[in-house]
Image (cartoon, rainbow, N blue to C red; front, top):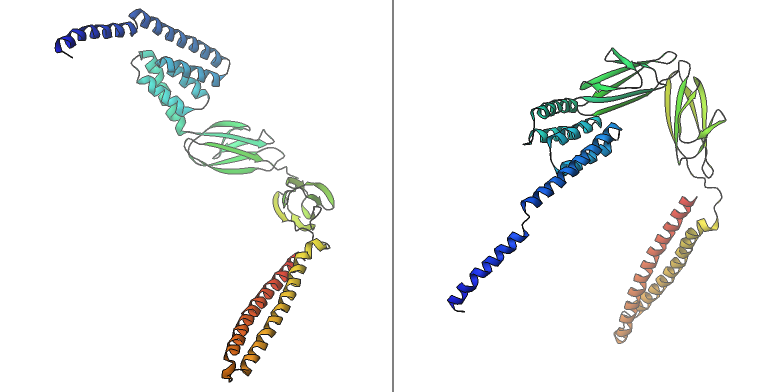
Length: 357
């Protein structure tokens, strides 16, 4: 193409391209309208999130705040999300949200103060240990490392380290529990208080489960039996399940004792049927048949050896001698294999018989 023609076409093409780019680019008015729409959506989501938080719907509020932040990452929205997460005990999430708020270019002095307080609170909560303490029955007094802290059920913060809880309730035996409180963890303590005159508690598990359990010939339930109260003194436990041999265990309970027993029930064998023993009979019968064949082939090998021995010095019948020698080797190898097979079958039949019985 001539250079003059190329120069002539280049200018119109560039002008057309510039016109297309200008046409596709949004106008300032359109950009302003789009920004206003996004802001309106974020404001609407913020109002809905505040209403949900006031109604106690914190999961919904947190989700709405996150949607609003996805539109506009405003520090006020981040701080409000952190407040909701703090109520939900998500202190790590609250810390992250407040730190993002402090990094925002839209941060105001008032929001900065709230965000810094939020960071301090979240860091403190992440270091503390949350404890949930309860007893059965409730209403027991609690001492933490010797200092009274209230009645059960109780929920609060613990300093990290090894801690001792002491429980007391009128009419019940005192109880003590030791726990290791690790920073940022949650400790759950639930204590079963024993009455002063309860005697002891029996827990029994059986394999298989679902067995009938009798205590001193009285039915007390099916296994597993958990924390069954009984008086102090000697008792007899009996575990019965159809198809299994019953198990009987003597046990001596003392005041305040908690005994745990595990019982393995053995299946009943009873009278064996032909279906139980036919493999044993089949293997032992096959063993006898194979042994008979082994004896027959052994006899053939012996006959061939005698014939070969008779012809050993007769050069005229050397070919027949070699034939008898080959027959002897063949019958001997076959006889050895049959005798080994007979022994294996006999052993298998005896093993089956023993285990079936």
